[in-house]
Image (cartoon, rainbow, N blue to C red; front, side):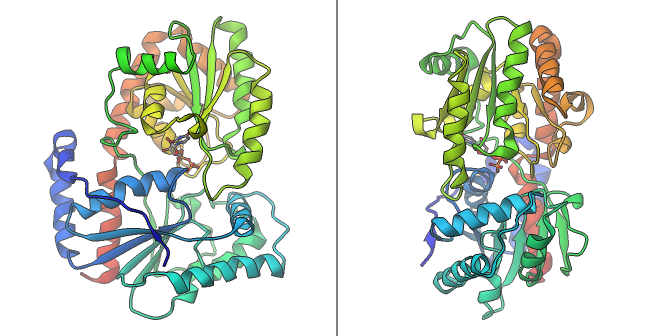
Length: 414
Ligand code: UDP
């Protein structure tokens, strides 16, 4: 059997206070039509990265609607996850020439084995990202509906990789992308939807924490100076997140802002073997500067600590080069912390209006915007407020649940 992630139930009604009743009423009406339906999300890691983050909140909230929802995680060895990380990178546009027959066999063999071990007693499967994308091919029995959910920017994929994966994806009944422009033009799937992800405002990662006491004390505990400006980036150690670019930004900002401190907060995920090498390389670079710090789950940085760091920072950077959505942008804005971020993928939809002035293409531009916000506290404060309102209106989990359950209702004809 595949690992089922052990989760409870989380009352979606608590969102009524925050979002008003209409959306929750609408969701409950959809859920009523789906009450006998069994839904299962499948991905490749129970921790680390945006998909795990999403499912951790999404499943318990859906359960509170009376729907049977589970989350199963596929297994694989190091070779499989090295290949799937390359497939992930290739879907985001990196060239990938290693798609030899042996590589394909390892990918397909692992999917086949996982398909045999899958608890298939569900009406709807939602398959997240490329790692389990061939499961459906090996699970032909039953009447379940299958949805492929793509979390990455697949608008310009490596052609060979895409043509390898495309037939497996096309066996699904529907495909969900974060935005229309991520849909590769030759994908033939009877239902294609654009549904952006969302963050759970009530989770440990995003719940309110008193800034003056809790957050600043946490900062002290990590050896930072609460009286000096702090800029952070929170990301997996991944080259698409441009960690070395962030250190370059630090070097430029410190010429203008004395006492600036920078922290790169990262996590290492089970399905990301590349992350460990990158972690070592980033550490080596960061160690050259007294005020550049690296913190990770290895030092106990969990959801609460990320929450505190996002609240205590003067500016959050997300200098991505490619980005599916970038939950971290929504997380920081939700906390009214201003964000300077790469103008890529799903980030611009989170930074509209004045926020869009802080979308950047280069290290220099990024440093310039960070300096501006550090020197103009009132602008930073306004930006944070605008960001919070935008996230509240568009990117909280109930909206995601409504959109996905509506699609499921359509597919199962309930
Ligand atoms: N995250 C975390 N600790 C870390 C680094 C990241 O909890 O040290 C979380 C972060 O808060 C966010 C998720 O991992 O919820 C990353 O999601 P995002 O969509 O930004 O990027 P992805 O990793 O999916 O590319």
